[in-house]
Length: 267
Image (cartoon, rainbow, N blue to C red; front, side, top):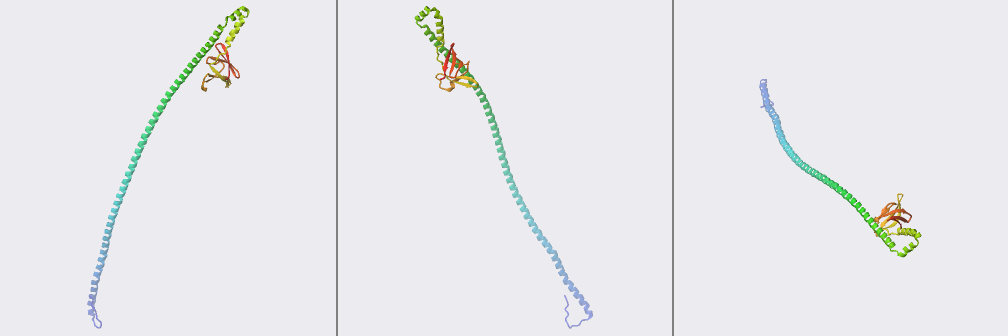
């Protein structure tokens, strides 16, 4: 505590020393608490601030950990969903590929079966075609033989009629021939010529004379035929229905049948 000196009072030198000492001690006693207070505050405030900062950092760390855990959990869930969808898509693709492979295998098997069936049918058709060709050739041969037989029968019947007519001549002719023996050979030759030159009815008609590849052909068709497929091309030396072609002119053809020559005109 400071000693107050009032003006107008006198003091001695001996009294100044204790008084100064008392003043210095009082000042020191006053400054120390202040210093301690400031030192305490300087120590407590940073400590308090550190504690507050630590608490805030701890809370922030907890929040960050929670946020990171939530983020990780969400990402993992999303990743799990994505992986599940990807696995599902891969399974669908595998199933599709397996289906396509089965379909390809089935198509290949079907193609192989079709090829085998086509080859078998082609072979069978070839055999049938060859058999039909053979049957057609056989039928043509039989038909030709039958037509030739008919023509021979017709020629024989015509010759028979000729000979019957010759044999049916009246005896007067024979008597006159006997009365003139010198002329009998000539008459016999004439009768033979007349018998040979008797016109016969051909079993076909001459429809034209054509020239193909530098060779001439007589176009003939069976009597009563109604289709063009029954026409035949006959060259010199060939036969049709037993009639052999010997020569051709512009509108005529000469055939030989039964030892006689027959001239046919284009109709």
